[in-house]
Length: 136
Image (tube, rainbow, N blue to C red; front, side):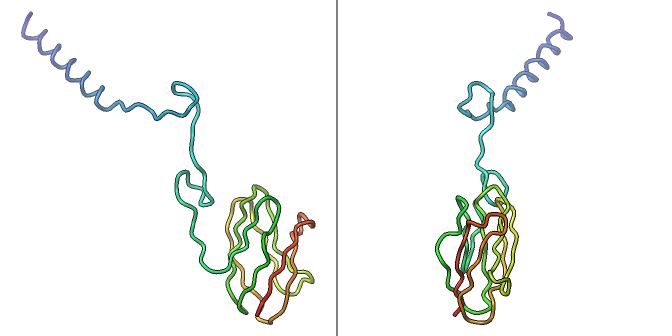
């Protein structure tokens, strides 16, 4: 073999080794070789990242329901977590205390009324959803 031929052969071998080292196989997704994708979506919207921590009083909307009644201090900041995929609202009845719309999968806050009392609320989009906020 000529000197030129052995140089090309060496370059091809080096290129093949570099290419093989940088080729990392894709993780298995359970859909067969190379098909499909798998990720965990969180309320932060970033696959694989943890859901944002909520401190303080929280209303969690899940399964088209508000969950347990909530008692808070006057003027408290309340976090609303909408685990459903559709928009909801947290609207006091009568409309004297608070009214917050929240997109599906989102988290939002609002301020509780400053006057103590019981504040029934509904979802204006789904009137069968009812809850109670107690301020004391």
